[in-house]
Length: 309
Image 1 (tube, rainbow, N blue to C red):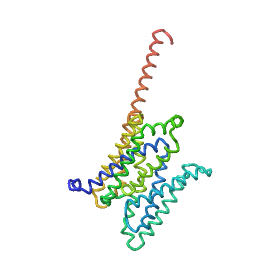
Image 2 (cartoon, helix red, strand yellow; image 1 turned 90 degrees about the vertical axis):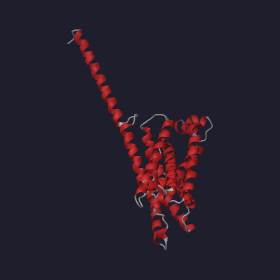
Image 3 (cartoon, rainbow, N blue to C red; image 1 turned 180 degrees about the vertical axis):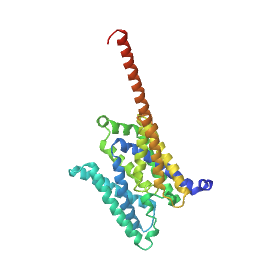
Image 4 (tube, helix red, strand yellow; image 1 turned 120 degrees about the vertical axis):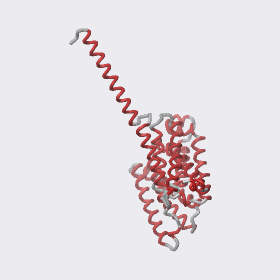
């Protein structure tokens, strides 16, 4: 245990997954209130072919170049989703499902080709499916840290604008806040969070890290600011604990452990959350039932005292 914690490489990886969890929690909350949680899943899967194509063009595993390829692929996926929705009678969720399946299928096909090529099975690209933070080198960690910190700053510094944009679009337009501009920034921070997290968490599970912390935070408060902080906290803790648990075993993928920890926070929030958590809701129901019974008994006693039968 202590030998793992003392490792400088592990400490850097732990810092990167913690910051990634914070950024994913914050951006995921924006997606939650924009009612586009499925969009994160679609764009995550759409990133895979971009990673493989960037590797094929470069001939080596350079995380920064692979992130650029993933970002381009995800942005193409986002554009196609919007185009399909606007140019056809297909609904947004159906368009997301189509792009998710097509791009991920293309990515798996390209990955199979790369792995069967000479030396391809040593590329380490399989880690982009389920995530393997332990395979990251220091330059990869620096790239993740810089990009995720930029995402956190954009969300935090633009808190008032995000709040108006998400909850009162008409008022935002009245203030001169460009809805189209905010949508572009939203897409950029969402794609950035996805592409920097796919090596640590994987393209399949990065969407869970975006969705679960925000849903968990919803059970604790009605304040958007507090919800943003809680979502970031749940995401950061999931990154820390999940990374440590995956480091205990040899070759254990990081993504599944991070998601399991995030799911544990969700279960706790679902049961104990003070805003419509199961336990709180049950206690409120029992209290209201007791109050109703006491009022009914009081009314019956009043009628009896007046001799009404």
